[in-house]
Image (cartoon, rainbow, N blue to C red; front, side, top):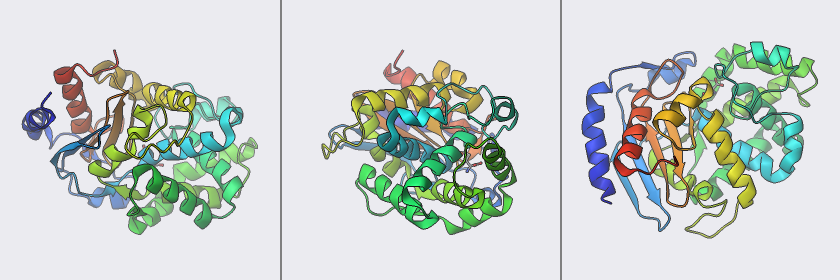
Length: 307
Ligand code: GLU
């Protein structure tokens, strides 16, 4: 298969729709990015990679960071984690408060905001301070992506902290149900910090390879989680990785994937490769519009959907 030709074809078809959709502006710093960018990267098990567009451009990974924090927490707490966060799709927007109220402060899954905030709380239990917890998360990402050059965008962090009223409300609601152990401010600060990490599609497609290979990085042969845990994470990505559009993403793309409001999406083809796309304009569900379309074209052209 000539992956570079396929990426070139995708880019040509995608270009006319790069002006559709809307950049996330509820975090004001995210609204500053150039909205018409597009990048797509593929990394194979032998380390060879293919790219199109601005694949070296770092962007705010936002909720893609939840894949790393869920992986880290699962590797520490194993099944115990599910006493505090579920593994069912929410069928609701990523920042919804309603379900959390009638389900007594237990978030449906680790990829909606409430679930990711609980995961951050479990990591704070272990590492104690905002800085130490963030350092552990970023060191884990550095190891997984075999890249020491990972950092966060202070501007985005501060902007989200200033305007993160809904996330604060989610955290306070969970605290009232005794599902948050640490101070609300500390948890939310740590959560915003890992959401503000910046990476490129080139780096992200490299980083997710371990999930395509039963928890082992096929290039360095390092194991990060058990193969059973990798299976679970992929299952949760497939069913919950795109919030209330997870069914739509499975239907059109057919791969486990995770999006972020910064416009990134990662996806994996089990036993074959991992992919990342970036385009900041979002569809109505808060997922990259052109990115979703590009991934759909990819699985259609290559027959590499898991279905
Ligand atoms: N930091 C974002 C928030 O909490 C993450 C949302 C996303 O990327 O979907 O609102």
